[in-house]
Image 1: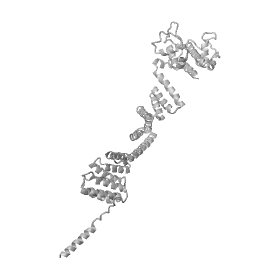
Image 2: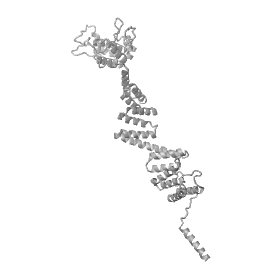
Image 3: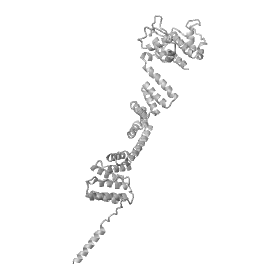
Image 4: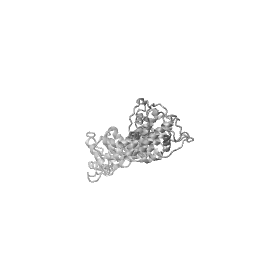
Length: 451
């Protein structure tokens, strides 16, 4: 009887043994290369679990690295069933899912591990892998960065982060440019801002964003971003030119000219140089008092206004002229005082016999011709061949004979092309000169002085 019980017991044990799961042979350490060497081993902190659990967890990881993801998954699950708080095994399940190329299934496991330890670097890195596989590049980059912050020893993540940032920047730039071409400035702006957030040292991003904002009419932001582009890359002529255009649109002439000049210093251009000269002229004009700025539209012009026109437009020529000592008693307090002094010292306009300039006196066409004639004499002294063109001709005027004292003055002004006879070939010496006539005459004198 005892023998029969012994035999029955042995048979039962044999049957149970045949039904049990056969143990998996673990690869010897160092005998095979890891199948997933970019996976971060979910190590357990000291004291997190008993040694048996920790050893079993490490064995499951070796199984995963041997290529048997399903077997590893079973072991990680068994560990969690036995020790639910052992979150490294939860991360192990996430990596097993990644090995099976099921990123969607991996993500909840990494989140479960992070729910127990928000700064657990292996789970953060694994989550980054899962998010990257799901096409969520920005979120993946953030997860990788968090993992590197949690464990600076994970230096391999740094290169991946840089690559992902670059990829994200490229995608944002492409999207922003397409939005701009499609006439969607708000969407384009968001794309550029996202690219700048990832690559804040890229000057061209600020410049392209500024161009979008300038076109949309947001010159305040456009100016800030174009200037930032120039700060980051002083040789970016397109950024400098854009800054100039924005400032010009805002009528900030002096600053616009400075921006254009900076661009021209990097890439010289005759067209840009001409633009700078024009802008600086506008800047000078805007800086002038109202009495000067209204000359062009005024039906008459005063002696102070004519002096200012001559002094500002022909300053270099007047400074080269011989200085004639003069006494002017009423010009010092006038708005045009510097130019009154300039024209009187050069002999282009004279004070009256009582030493007054009488700046508010209206200028006649004869007075304008007198000043023009004297400026022509200064130009002729420097350019004799050019002066021959206005010395020889003797035009006829219906109201001025050749013996008239003012005939030589009027003839020189007309022969040079600086002034013109009026209807019926009359000169009309006493008719008041208009502001437009005075401005045109001085502009023509300026052109002759530059030849």
